Length: 260
Image (cartoon, rainbow, N blue to C red; front, side, top):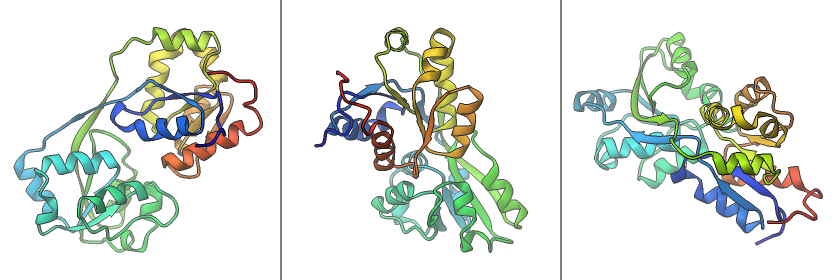
C-alpha cells in the first residue's frame, strides 16, 4: 500500500460488477473511491441458430471483457469444448479473459487496444472472402465491421448484452460535487460519460466540468471536450493499472492537505 493518492476522492463510474478492482487500487494508494455506476449491463441470449452461425465463422472478434463473459453464458460455458473459429480480441484485458476461459487468442493488438489497433494487425488485413462475427453489446461503434467489409470480408454481429442507464438516486453525488467533496472522475466508455452527464449535468454541470477527468481513449476525450470538461487526462491504456498511474500523475505533489 502507498500514499500516492492520500485523501484524493475519485468518482468511479464503471458498472458495479466491474468497478471493484479499480476501487481497490485507488484505496490501496490511500485514496477514496466513490462508486457511482453510470452504466448497467444485462444479458441478451441470442437464438440457438444465431449462435451456431457464429461458430461457423472464420473469425470471432470480441470487443470487450463483457462480450467474453456474456458470450460464455450464451454458449452455456462450453465454448472451450467446441471447434471454434479463430479468435481475436480488441485488447489485452479481453484477451486475458478469453485465455482464462480456456480459449486460444490468435490476434490481439500489439499497442493500441481498440478497433483501430486490431484492424492494423496483419491477420485483420487478409480477410477477403472470410466471415467475421463481432461479439459485442447491442449497438456500439460500426468502425470494425465497416472496415472489414471494405477489405472484402462478410462481417456480422453477435450481440450478447445491452447497456442501460441505471435508475438511482443522484442526490448524494450532486451534494458532494456542490460542496467540493470530489477531486476527480474516471470514465471508461463514451456511453458512460454521456450517462454521467445525463444523471448529474443538469444540476451540477459547472462543478462536474471543473473536476479532472480521466478517460481511456481519444474518442472519449473528444466527447468530454464537447461537454466542456476543463481538464482531461487520457490513460495510456484502458487497464485499471494504467488508470491508477494516470491518477497518480494528476495528483503527484498536489494531494497534500486533503482529507478523507
